[in-house]
Image (cartoon, rainbow, N blue to C red):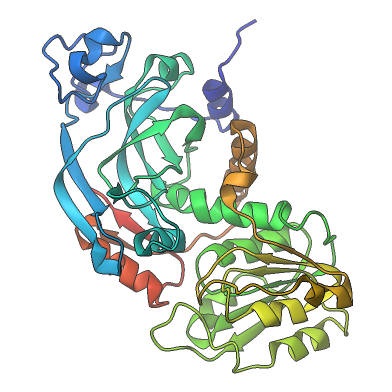
Length: 400
């Protein structure tokens, strides 16, 4: 009996058939020793491949690369493009990915501002997609090959190359473009855990779910996934994004005025709680998925059903302020503040979620809207666009 490694088994599940023309794509055959590799080699450090056999590596990987770097926290212009940032070295259990796309997410802006502190300097981003450019011995044993199309979520994706542990790699199946695959890693996986796990099964098939901001980003995915789970969905969106929101299958759509220059809607322009209670015949929603934050906290709590759960996962309008737990006693309600890392704790959970998402994509059950792709040289502009609330879908960097 042939035993497949975890990567091969996962790849086989999606029927990935990769035909790689080594004569045109690669100039270094696998296991070739780069005896002249010096201190700047990304494939094994000071002694290059000779010290870490058997590594596989594209000879075209440079010692420095283009990257969007934060050296001091601040506004979007704190994100500076540098053309000579050191290319990451390949370490045991890793691959080097040559990025074609990097996803732009609100959490990236929180890191840039210092709201979620990181050690300085750092390369922005934590979501990317591209092709494998170098593999370690451990990665090769799992069946990972140079040229494999992959997506991933690790820090440092706003760059031409990123070192990625094999446990964080997702092979991209045939029929799914790298732009779409990149889009699904943070937003898709976040929407998946929000609609399948974060509610702790306090909402059942046929019950109501309120999702804020379905006109863009993560909650476009969440609205569709909630419907696939059998929930009845009330979505909120701005007038400028209503055309997109109407395609998501929400049972009820509450359209709000816009806040000029903001990434969220005017949540005081409509009495949302009253409308929710009208739609649900006074019962409220068993789950509220809220990535808006400060502006919607009271609305979300007020819209809950008896023993419903308020799922607060974002801060688009500002962080949710502290509030007394006694506010929840009227409906014996629940509140949670989850994050993706706690819902992808190991490769099995990560693969399980990606498996279902890619399956829905291939079956045509999910519609993914890629709004636009900025060249990496316009790093600041990408963040400004997202923070201004202009996007009607996923915003990416395209990396040359």
